[in-house]
Image 1: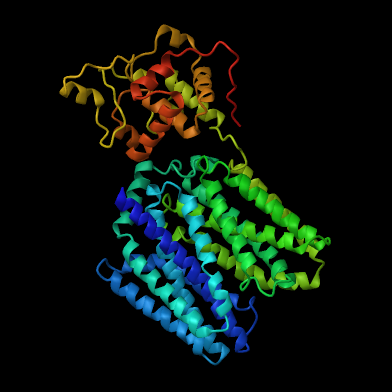
Image 2: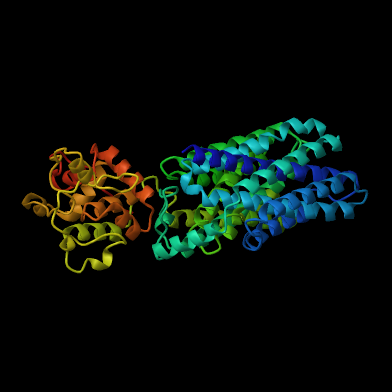
Length: 557
């Protein structure tokens, strides 16, 4: 446990340093380029966003070519080169030299960021508050810039602080860089799952958790792309008309982005991302509405505040969802940093065209042109089930669970991985299987200690009583799930573990999840139902009659 906490702290530090180094290097680069007679912030996006994107996308090659023993040497060399590029930007006398050395530095920063993303992806299952860790690291990285704002004219102090950040990031990355075996482990997990659907304890509150990986990544990719276009277009309004001299050298925008990023992470972790889509939906509406209000003569500060809050939430969103889904895809070390890469590419593609259009067109008309974009985002959020505050399995899924419990003829096609038909149950053997670290049978332990068997009722796998058989299986399952507010994944676990008495490790393997994840779902089921063991849960499920009072209807979308 202590080792896991230590690894999570190192991940947090690595992500924080990456956000800080990237943002402060952007400010450092643009300040030096402007002072040497270079172009403005929009035209400087190519070396910043373009080179860092290349670094992010080049990480899989580095991850496969650099051996275990050579990784410390590689990270040391990359760190030295990064500091050298920083010095080049600080002391170069021509815009071309600043652009070239800056591009090299941002490429190395991209490699460093991808290393931190990959390490977070590999260890995501051991992070209790996954999105909060990402949002908190982003917030701290942004806030760490504030003390340096008063030294923007002093290149030496900025260069020293940035060099220290780069060195610290390189040292931590050398420590947390996962071994090559992590790729093989992910590949084995994909084969075990069979690629049928996503399985995750992190973001199971939205419909994507029940999609095929390819379908889900397409939805996420398009959704992040549309959000990137929207926020980068709104950024153009902010950068042009803002009364603040620059969003890069003022405290208020940074504080708002930090608050938005951290708040987004906290909200995304509530009820396993149940509110993720709702939060993004309202951030989109509020950001667009604020810009329309500003153009209509409303307070400009309100428009900027809403935008920067939404920008922070969006950063946590695209970072978290791509790190989460990468584990289900081929080349996960590429996909884990795709959110950052996609946003960078969109910033390059949208910046200059949006600036030109806004200069030539009424800004209100530009916002109106975003309406199809808003409609597309809403359609994707709805299709993914991310706008449903009470996500439930589809009707065919519920029917499949019920048919599986009843052993109805022809229901085999509806049985999900890890479920067995009732007709396939084995006679009860008096087992009281309790989720433990090694999936051991509690009854065996009690027998070995000379303790009597607990009389909790029928064992898993025992045939239902006559009263149970008289209950409509579908209505019974729906009523049970509705009374105890079970999630879709908990319904699947309930249907599986009460179907027979297979060891939990076999159930977990058939369901395509780890034993620890299955035990976590069982613990949640025990807490919600007031039971303490698998036998008690089975007894409650099969023998407790429906309530006499009108019961809550279990609704499916």
